[in-house]
Amino acid sequence: MDQFGITEEMLSVTDDDVSQVLDDIKSFKAELYSNLKDTRFKYNPTRNSELYEAIVAMYGEEFVAQNGYFVTFDMYVQMMEVVKLASKDKADQLLGTFLI
Image (cartoon, rainbow, N blue to C red; front, top):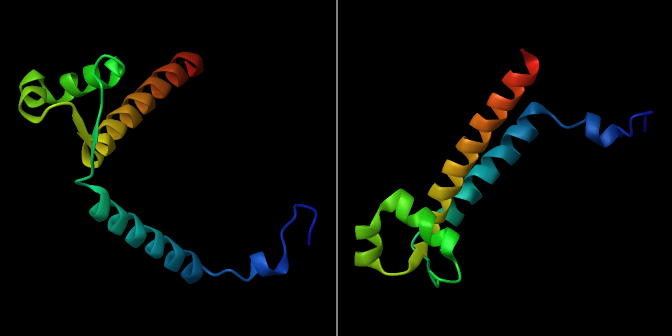
């Protein structure tokens, strides 16, 4: 082990090993999504007002009226993507402010 804690075993990992692990993770992620995408969770719009507001903002009042107070795993993933993009944009704004 060197001064940075890198062992001989770590040094023996190849790009092909890393690629294989990444491919396995991507495959697992796709399988997990496929199995969960239609899972629905009922929520209480009074107790979960922020969730209700987020669903209305993304899908509209009509969607809620037609589908009830449910959120699917697919909807959750879509909402998290929006949050991720918004967070990235906000971070870019803040970094731009401090770097200029």
